[in-house]
Amino acid sequence: MKKKTFRIILIGILVLFGVLRFFGALRFFNVPSTSNEPNLSLNSRFIGSNLVKPKALDFTYFKFSDSLHGSAYIKRLIALPGDKLECRNGSFFVNDQNIDDSLNLRYSYKISKEFYDDYIKESFEKDESFLAYPISNDSILTFLDDSFVSELPVKIERFNEVESEGVSTDISSKTSNWNINNFGPIVMPKNKYFFLGDNRDNSLDSRYRGFVEEENILGTLIFKF
Image 1 (cartoon, helix red, strand yellow):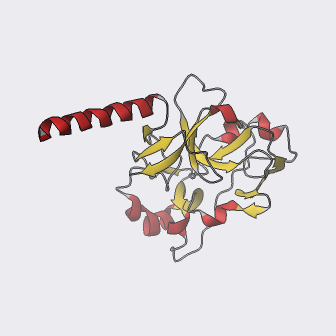
Image 2 (tube, rainbow, N blue to C red; image 1 turned 90 degrees about the vertical axis):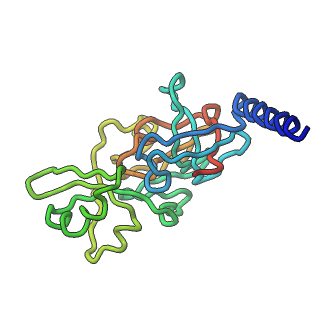
Image 3 (cartoon, helix red, strand yellow; image 1 turned 90 degrees about the horizontal axis):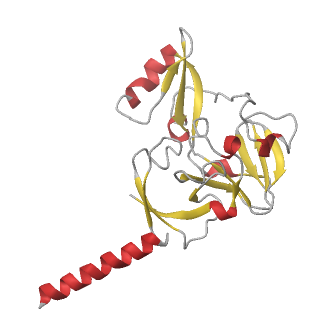
């Protein structure tokens, strides 16, 4: 009798999970990219729900207007309708508050090969998400977390890209003297949302793909493991 009761309960739970998944109340994701490192690690998993309305700085899954028939994207919600958004030297301000100060983010750095060999290479040899590219005989472009850089014995400066090619017209049409790391201020239009990856210099997000319509927001991350 106990075995039969347990089986009925198990079947009920499985049916309930199936219904919740079908209606989007629960969704299970595997993170396939490094665009949200270090806070959503490559190949990490999380559970999301469309029953939880996203707030500023929540990780959210959605579709860009040019990807409505493809997979959902996962990024951090930065600005909501009516917010004033500005980017100054690669740092983001919402309603005049620097929102990056409270986050551990990943940025690009241009460093010498000697510095890379002495302070960085050994720390990341087994890190699947780590990227480093030689850009000359003695220089390397790499991507490092704020938490790691703050512990280095020598201060290094971020590499701020000034390229404007490929930037979304949602940005370029609303601000002057802009590039990928300097634009605004922009007042977010009605029903429009702005998303960024935490791996700021290695993420195709709203800077390139444009604002996200409210109707294309699918849910909010509620648990990661």
